[in-house]
Length: 536
Ligand code: NOJ
Image (cartoon, rainbow, N blue to C red; front, side, top):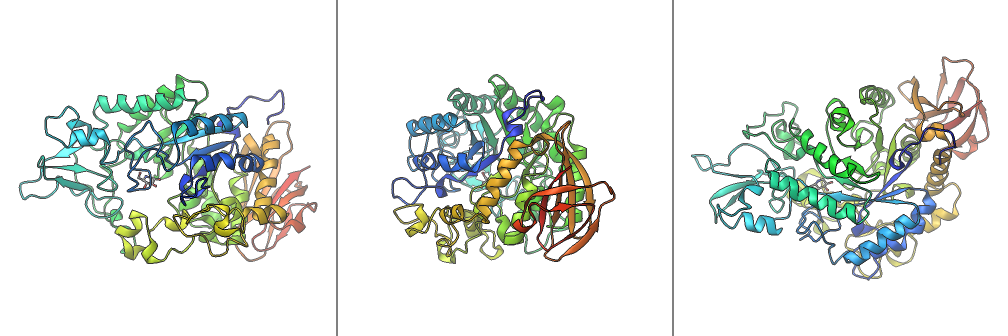
């Protein structure tokens, strides 16, 4: 970690987060679904990889309409994943290894089977009626406004018993809570306290920008840029249903709860343009510590565009706002499938050398690809609801490929989702034996990053951007500086950096033949080359 005498940084600034989708990581009881015991069995793998924090996607009791993002009890563990005892054992084992545990918190909506909603829908005068967003129909019988569900169709569901509509940004089985109600706020803050008391080191807050909606529920405007291949949700611009000014007060309340404990982390899942995203750091930095920065997975893989986006982000970050970078998650195509195997190495080098906390999605480190799931095996509601749009998230959620034994060492039963066809060639065990594998590359990269203050916490200095190449420097007072050169194309290219004093040694490269070579300011790169250069 940091050398003595340097400023102290907190664990999540120095660290590397690893997202586990628990269903798909490791099954320990043969039911074909990953579980907490399974995660426990694989902790040594994670600590050898060098990651420092584990984020678990939801493990709570749930009818699984949206694979755990529909929660029926915020303070328990789904029997599929284990028990609270298993959870306690897991957190203890994680802490023993010097790692941290981050839980997914899903405060925007519950399951329609949550006791709160069962009460709320039971009658109009139930004390929990106002915990959800209930509205009368319009005089012509239609829903209260034009809002759409992210998963397709209208966002309002008619409830026959009580004769009103309720709002659901996602599935109708995921009714949105009414965050304007202080009782809801208090209930969710208590959920946070419950897990913090158990020693959880932080939360990744699901759809943070959705939490509160326009008070008057005004119609969303039409999106003039909508194209038929897009999700139906994109027909409108969600300006009244998301990112409302009042959300910042809620985030501040969450942060306040965390600040009552030592060194806990608040991450927000937020898909917004950068200038809106950075407002989630909060006034005086009292909002989220890390509003997830998804630029690397939403922008085209193009050197100039990315260079500009990185600079914009660096420039817009508030004072003391700490950056972060993400290449993939359980909702987005895997990086290897989006930009190809060779570029995925370049992407890894970028993720782990940009300034800020990196988040790795399980399997990224072995270059896992999206797995085609035959139509009759599709399970993701987003895929099932919009079958013609290729939006199923199943392909990015397939079981981790550990070895070449049946079912890749993931389960002794039948995996809940089919495995990649090539798992006997592409798996952890094989890659561990190959010094040039993606896994070996990740390991060396992580190790270097964690040893070098410039890479871990140093400043970001833009150096070069062309059609093909992105170049930047990382530097920290009195420490060796590093130059990163990334060819984001498959074609060779020549470049000359303005600074003619540049001189250094390649310490790590996507193509190992580069390593140990000296470079100056005039360089020719091969296609897909990424170089990490220690400057003299
Ligand atoms: C965002 C989560 O990442 C996604 O998987 C889920 O479907 C929605 N939120 C709804 O909770």
